[in-house]
Length: 173
Image (cartoon, rainbow, N blue to C red; front, side, top):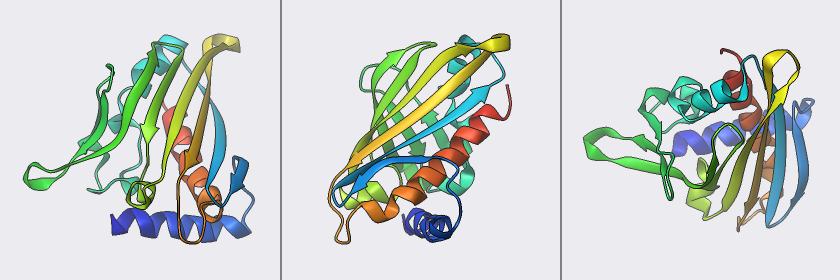
């Protein structure tokens, strides 16, 4: 967990002085919303198949184990975006609350240090057909909760991490 907290803080500090790749839609002391877009080189059905296998595209740097191969996603009501830990442990990163294959996936929960803060949010991936047989992918993460120094200060860092993941997702068919 310290690994996640350190990564998000480092990204937040670095991103504060750099041009943001994505968009912090809104932010305040008790929450924020971020939005990222990418283009995937395959059709929505292919993008969906990739999306539901986060071990194939999520960065190992943003896991508790340091290895994205430990990530899984069970696409069913109440399904788990989980990560297996040594000695039979696990992390439930998010829960599946909406799945429309080839169209949208919504998960709820707190990624990384947000979970330890008691903050939670809805992460929605929207897929739509684009020119040339490609897919437009939009990821929106709306987070609410409490942090002693407020949540607005980490919005840029969270957006940066989400942008990195979406870029990785779109990088290979």
